[in-house]
Amino acid sequence: MSTRITDSPLYQHLWGTAEARDVLGEEGRLRCWLDVIVALARAQAATGVIPDGAARLIAEHARPDRLDLGYAAEQTRQTSHSMLGLIRALQEVVPEEARQYVYTGATVQDITDTATALTLRRIGGIVWRDLRRIEERLLELAVAHRDTVMAGRTHGQPGSPVTFGWKAASWADEIRRHLDRLREGAPRWLVGQLGGGTGSLVFYGNQGLVVRARFCAKLGLADPGISCRYFRHLAQPGRPCGHRCLRNAPGLHWRAGGAGRGHVRHPYGSRVAQ
Image 1 (tube, one colour):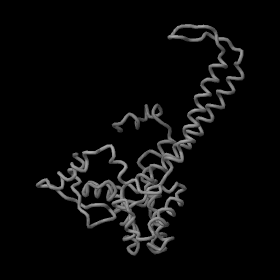
Image 2 (cartoon, helix red, strand yellow):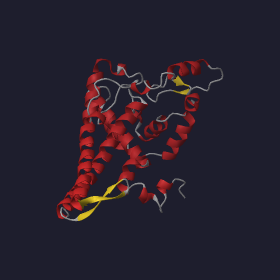
Image 3 (cartoon, helix red, strand yellow):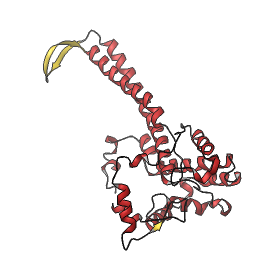
Image 4 (cartoon, one colour):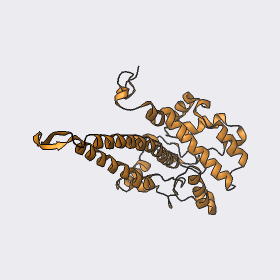
């Protein structure tokens, strides 16, 4: 039995559609993350960072139905890392010769931010389609009822006469504004992300910009031009100070760092508490 009303068999239709849930639900999110990991491997193989065979094996096995999600959840709890459980579950099913190349040179935000852009594109496509249908129907109503008189409204009271066609046309105009917003906003949010742990692409040497461009192109996203690894912290000026305090706090439980950087250790428990 679901504990969330959005998943309730009785009420979920009030909060979304099966089509949207397929994109935004757990399986859709995992599928999107894995698509990004596959695109990364293919971009790396195309530039000689990893072997072609490794990229093919990663692509072959990076599917939700091939992963042990129970194991992924266990590893997520054990490491307190938002991505490492999934990476380890994928490495478990990928042949040994390709395991070391899974997610290499990336960090969590590279996968999740890029996946968010893909999700926005898919959901944006659904919204665009539905808004166009609404607009078409409203324009039909505007024409059909251009002479259908009705009471206007002012301050919640009947006002001077208007036509229902005029009212439908005003609704269509606002729908067109929404469509304009989607079209104008898309180039700003349909952008990939790849920078590695510090955002500098240092893992790739002089190939960094080429790898990122290929990675974004394979997903049909724009290249960001520069890593936005630190943009998310601009509204949190106290966070660096907080991290320094955490680093020096006694008794911290340090855990595995970035999934692509096994040598790093972070105080994940304290970060979650923060």
